[in-house]
Image (tube, rainbow, N blue to C red):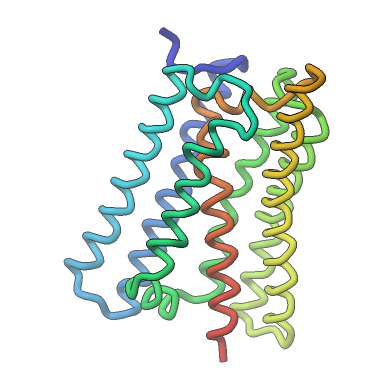
Length: 241
């Protein structure tokens, strides 16, 4: 059986699979920096970093197994990929992680600019456009999602620099950027739901191709994680003096 369960060339799938591991390394690095800044014990920091890395590798493997079984490759409303990956991960973030003392401690210690720079990983949105090139995604969805993510990633670099330099209006700039970035990811989710509904009703092109492996890792990981990061930035802005 082919490892990749989608209709694009294997080299694209392989390149994406490597790219989607980047945010896990970025997050692990940020957690390590935050743990050190918060003066947590080295053993605690190590467990935190290793635990995070293992969690996401296990989560990615779970998504891969669901893809290989063909479970996600069925058009339903709401999509199975949302019900069994996006929503559970979102609940895990906000019901469990968000309420822990460790999260609050790390949020206090991690600089605002570092949280903003995490969004550079959204350059991975270019894969929406690449997948569209191979006729696997609707044009509007591919470009709105892809260009929106690319914009958020590139402007994150600029906003982070404004924060580091303590630009006079850096809080306002960060707030505006954060709202735009959050609206972008919500737009991607709602557009995907709408296109799935249209596909079921009229047979128009939907987004089923991104529920194959490895692209299923986008809806499985990115929306919940990005939303959580944006909410964390809102929370961090309140803590900024």
